[in-house]
Length: 302
Image (tube, rainbow, N blue to C red):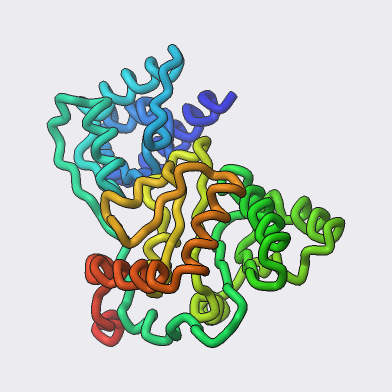
């Protein structure tokens, strides 16, 4: 049914484009790209923007269905695409793998942020005995939120009262987590903050010591923007190995080889107990910040 849904969506796009006489479609968040072929048949130029990868980094599917989809998508890119925007080198690498004879231009487009937006963030506190950990994103299984909760419980046993978790966002796991937190009486150290506005998020950016992005292998992430924001906030960022972050962020992120409580807690405790490691990680963030920052030119735009 999923693939029929993609086909149905492509025909809706065609009907919309013809109704308004559009001659260009910029499309994102698609999987069966080849179903867009009829847009090109009607003279509509197609520019895909790849916010996700075609498959999870390091885990290329080898089953027959995925091989067929990759073949069809490769044909689509070779014959129907006018240009492509990619969010990360990994996205472009996978595109060129499914379409070795790509004959249209590819551009890597980075998220950019106003430098002034991060000037309000305070340096991490060195006086508090508490160590604050931040997750920002959707509360879904493939985002590794349940693994974070298991990590929090493990650390509370080994370091009572030290680690405070701030979970910012909502999703399908919100109710489940609320029930588990209530049953385990863990609301003092694992706190669900819900959806926050910009000013509220900046408050937690300042409060935090570490950002965590434990995306699981069943989500093909192109480049997690929270990882970038953590780096711009000058905080160590622990990321899953399934996020293609090091291609751009390099040593500014710390890669977790496994998304489980044992591995994550080990990395967190290392940064907590070894200040030299912690501040070395902070220094590493400064080497890549200029890639994403632009001056505050809001007054020139209307």
